[in-house]
Length: 82
Image 1 (cartoon, helix red, strand yellow):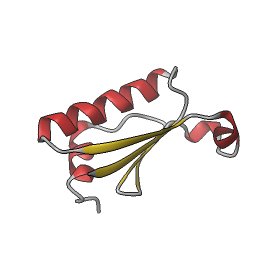
Image 2 (cartoon, one colour; image 1 turned 90 degrees about the horizontal axis):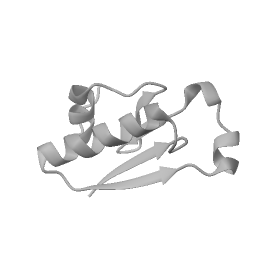
Image 3 (cartoon, one colour; image 1 turned 45 degrees about the vertical axis):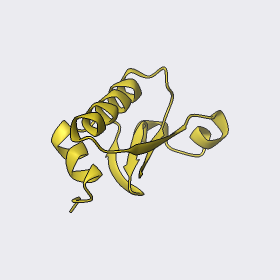
Image 4 (cartoon, one colour; image 1 turned 120 degrees about the vertical axis):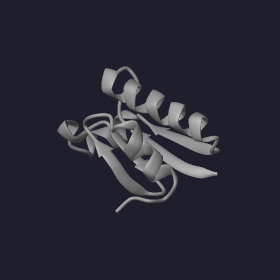
């Protein structure tokens, strides 16, 4: 199971795009992922709103603010981030 963490507000369009892109790539690659979504006000208030949403795969920051390209998500899911 590949750990994936999304931090942000689920009503945000960028967050929704980031989430759907990760789910689509995991399905395309036939990989099992475990998605943890962090959107509580207390946690978000400790972070810079300009850096949200954030995507972590394997505890590595993959994207901040804008949804990443599918190629980057694929690399991250396979553990090939540089």
